[in-house]
Every structure is written in C-alpha cells, then in structure tokens.
Picture 1 (cartoon, rainbow, N blue to C red):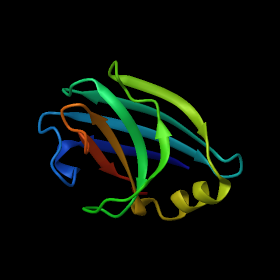
Picture 2 (picture 1 turned 180 degrees about the vertical axis):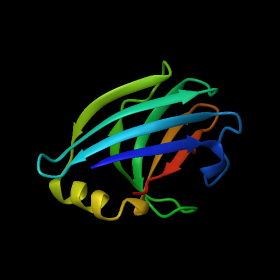
Picture 3 (picture 1 turned 90 degrees about the horizontal axis):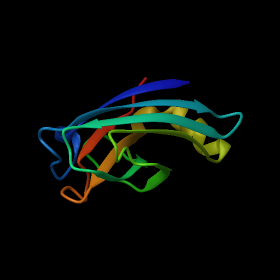
Length: 116
C-alpha cells in the first residue's frame, strides 16, 4: 500500500515551522514487515529526527517507526517493522502521522496525517 503525505507546519500540534513544507512517500508491505519511504523537507532548518507516530489529527502519540531525517532536504530507505504494526497502519492510516523535527522546532517542524 502506498501513501503520499503532505507535510507542513500548520499540522504540528504545538505549532511548527510556518514557512516549511515537505512530502512523505511511504510504501508499506505488511507481508514482509517493511516500510520504505522518501522524505523531503524545504524551508526548514536542518532536520534532526523523523518518524511515524500513532495518534489522531490534532493529537499526539508515541513514535512507532523511525526514519532517517531529511537533513539535506531528502532522505529515503526501508525499515523493518512488526507485521502487525504494518497491517494496523494500512488498515487505519488516519490513526498515524509523519513528523520531521529540528532544533528550532523540537516538537515538530513539519507534520502530515496519513490517509488513504
């Protein structure tokens, strides 16, 4: 299952970077327990962390998948996850969101809620 998630500062619960934007392209393979991704970030200070969190729009929740942050403006890779978690994200993507953090916005510079 593939997801394209628009990232911006307006979706960050505590207020993110108002000028920043980005995109998360995510491909989830529950059978393999694998999530592959490409992250982009523009108009923010150097990204230091990036993750998928579990939580509804407007809310916060725990980190469930770590990504390499797009510190040069882009990052990509694949990570192994439990098959159950991969299935849960595919079945209820709106219960998860992607966040890119940096030093200026440690609670999140960019965020985007996953959806079908």
